[in-house]
Length: 422
Image (tube, rainbow, N blue to C red):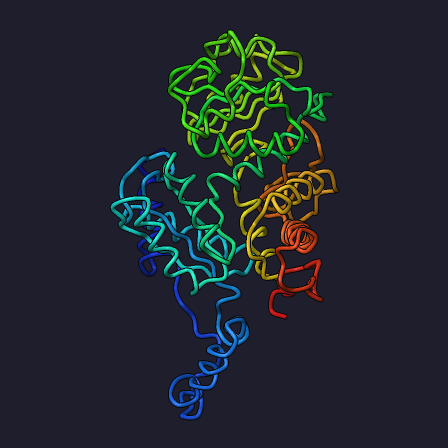
């Protein structure tokens, strides 16, 4: 990262006013009558209605379109445990993305909690304020317990995007990449380098979509996670395989897929050469992937490669998922974001990639053409069709699986951002 870019990033966050989000008034507040309706004495009327029927809060307050982005700052991007206050720019950024891409109002909350239980209790006690909760940048293994308990205690969607957002976008890209490679998910040999929150969620979702656990080799700092190890957490033990493979070098031999959620330059050209024909490589460490695309393509012309970076094709970017997943969940007032809704988002995202790309997307990226293929296995982030396709698929899955409390909205599928004003 150049010094000029670092300064530009600091200036972006400081000017024209500090931060990236603000609160706006959504109704008239100009006259004396307006103010008497907004606060005392008029505000007493919706208070009484909500006291009689808690669901009335969705009718008379902003709850139904409000998501909290909450962190303890224990796993900030690739920077580690820098504390809750240091995570605030990231959480504000997430709130910006919710608004920019799905019209969802969002507020960041940074929790200085002395333990996972204290964090859980804090979030659970404020959950009534919101229509949904997006957990962010919380380290493993604590994040698994935090999310599980909050889902149990809260009657609104609770979603750890570092886990499930990454998994949904990865699975969609993987389905498309394997089809282009002439392979099937249920037959593919998959190596996953990394065993944290994102890696566990990615592999679990791929298994739900059809991958076989016995074909997955997950690797942590001590090597392949196998059934002979006695140092495994419950999350890692779910991927323990009966195998004599012990290292990445062992596991990569003949593998169809490599998923990297670890660190830079950890997949060597020599290891890439050991993979099967038409290998699929998702090198998602940020900002420096496990192997650079130019290195991978120079090593093997048949490789299909994705990264987490915007300056290469096939970016695995969570913004392709979470704004629209929450949009669909909020609009049918889902009580949770369940596996059916996640799988629906995967399929919608994968299918959208196969449709003709609108001119507005080509213009945004300075491209003459773009079509489903080895360098286009996921939609671009500016594709306005994401809003309608994913929110509708998620809302339908919520209804079909019984977690929705409202029917499909009349304006669905959403055609444009203007529909959000309805």
